Image (cartoon, rainbow, N blue to C red; front, side, top):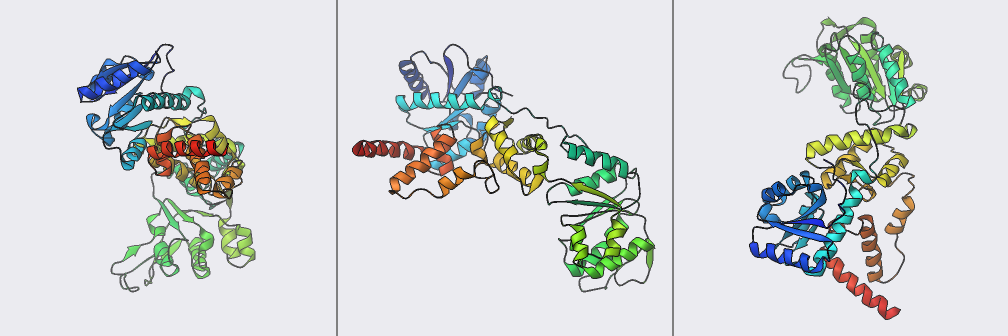
Length: 464
């Protein structure tokens, strides 16, 4: 649920604390120091507060963690479309970090001073306002476009057309593309549209199985054929009978086994390791590689006769950097999926984050993008993913922000306090001035940032 806009009148501050003395104290501080900017209401439980607040999108809650049931219940309040500042008498760094990761927009250790309370309220509302989808969320469409694929670029439209045309045939399909471009997904789509979708789809990764076990994996073995063969076992080719056998990273296959695979393709029969019996099977072969197959043939690492037997219907999957229009829809789909799995509240990406995602080269392609989004979702929470959440995760390729990374990783020589100041102020800027979130990212206490700022002011005053 998206947060609504700020109201024109005083912003409603909802205080939740089981201690009536604490409720009165906070409400009194707000009444005395808010100067009409905030209007406080106080409740003994989160349920009572949520039931009483008519427009939760126009309120912010200050809640005692023990009162709402602990860190695990922070998400319940945030899910009600109300940003939350968590408070606790246990003002440890671990508690603050856990509260922020749980979805709180800020954390205040008790006792809370009047000046700090008003400053943090204003900062929290400003941060929340900047994160609302209405203030710059990137429009995306996370609906799959074809057989689990997301992408409407011309390159992907051509792939979809090839799959539709090739699927009904029984001829082998040879898929090429860099790692992470979705070669197995393409193989599954071919199987799905082949007319034999109810039959088996069996995948073998030729680079993940030891060479001496690969023959058994594909063709099976009988009991006693080799050490450890305690039972007879059908191989992938037999299990895929009537369906599709997908041989991923086929260029990694040993040359000796390539010869046996060629005989299988020519005869349509398999012979289990240690067995003299031939078994006839009918399978559709789909294979894939992230290497240049023509270069592998020229180098003698891939049998030319096997290659031309398999390279009948070729499909090439373009890398993500060549179809940048697909990056945001993919990122949105991953964000929604992982947020649901991890019970987070992310809904989209702000403008700066969207631009950085599109600008990145993604050498690991869709897999790298998916891993990045999962890491962001697991380690944080909020409504929008902002640019700060992407750093330094998307650094490493030729992004527009690479210079900034160099500035942080190689600070100018100077006194330690000046270098600390640069790092802390840069982190604060990345989190929109939110001290609690910056402290959590730096793994220090928020009070440390306040103390160091006072020290820096004195030092700068002395040198002015």
